[in-house]
Length: 226
Image (cartoon, rainbow, N blue to C red; front, side, top):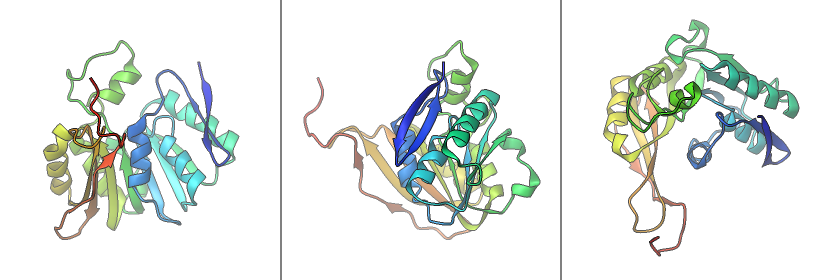
C-alpha cells in the first residue's frame, strides 16, 4: 500500500513496503553536496528520495532518476506529479548496465545507494524488489562505477554509500573505472563506536589525493548501548 510522507519545504514523497528510504540515503543526499545548477543522475533511485530531497533544498538544473524496477519508477512518477517537478526530475526505467548513449558524458554528479551484499549474502527475502535492493543481483560495484564513469563529464563526481567492509572493493572499482577516490567520510553510531557506513566520492580523470573528513556520529552520546 502506498503511503505519502512529508520531506519538509513543501515536498512530499510516496513510498510503499518495498520502496522506502533509510538514514543511509539521507546521509548520501547531504554528502553529495549538490551544487545549484548541477546536472545529476541518481542510479537505482527507488522511490526517488535523493532527487526529491535535492529539489526541496536547492535547484539542480536537472535530475535523471534511473531504476530497473517499473514499480519504483511508477511510485516516483506519482511523487513528481504531486510536487509539480516534471521539469526538474526525469524518471527513467533502465538497467544501469545499458543506459542510453545520449546520456554519456553529460552529468556533473552521479549518485547511488547500491546493493550492499554479494549474491547469497546479507539474508534473503521472498520479495524480488527487496532482493534487488540488498544483493548484487542486477549490478555489482564494478557495474555501478562503470556506469558512473560513462555518464560523467571530465572532473564530474560520483558519490555512493556502502558498508565499511566493502571500502577496499569500492575504491578498487572506482580506480578501475577512472574515478579517483577524493573524499571519504565514516558514519558511526556514536563516538568510540566502529563505523557502520561509508560515504565515498570519486572524480573522473582527476589526480590522486584522498581527503578523509571528520566522522559523522548518528548519536553524539558517548554511552554505549547494552
